[in-house]
Length: 179
Image 1 (tube, one colour):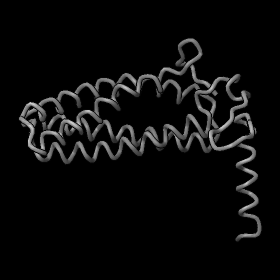
Image 2 (cartoon, rainbow, N blue to C red; image 1 turned 90 degrees about the vertical axis):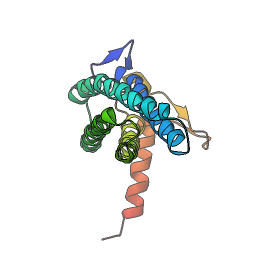
Image 3 (cartoon, one colour; image 1 turned 120 degrees about the vertical axis):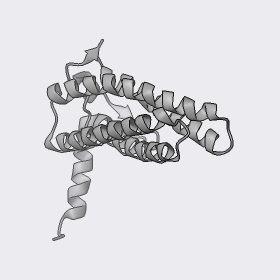
Image 4 (tube, one colour; image 1 turned 180 degrees about the horizontal axis):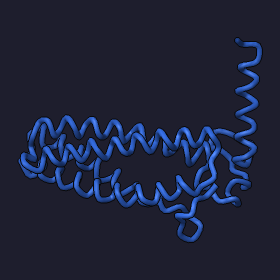
């Protein structure tokens, strides 16, 4: 289930996304500090954090695209990956607009609003990315897929493949007899 963008058997994309996510979240925190009475420095700091986030997004998206093209995925995983990529593209555009607005006026109210919209899109895209990694096992090596893991709230050990089969069987039993 791994794509070609790996280092020592670990996918690169999930490692890189921490930088833009951290930058965008820090930009929102700087906005909150500015809005609640901080100096103009915080508005400017937020603008530069967005710029770093955009640069990191470009790098992370390159490796994500390589994985998208090369990792074997089920049809369900491909649908989630398509939505994940679309939301991330939207997030990049929204933060690009936020940066453009704030470049000329770092304390702009519109810049704060656009940044808030961007962080909401980022959260949705991140949830989908987590689903790809943890539910659909995209990026997992073949050895990981067959390794038994015990969930914190479960005493039974299942490999991810067994867990998926078990969840599918539960879903089938719930929907049996329904129209």
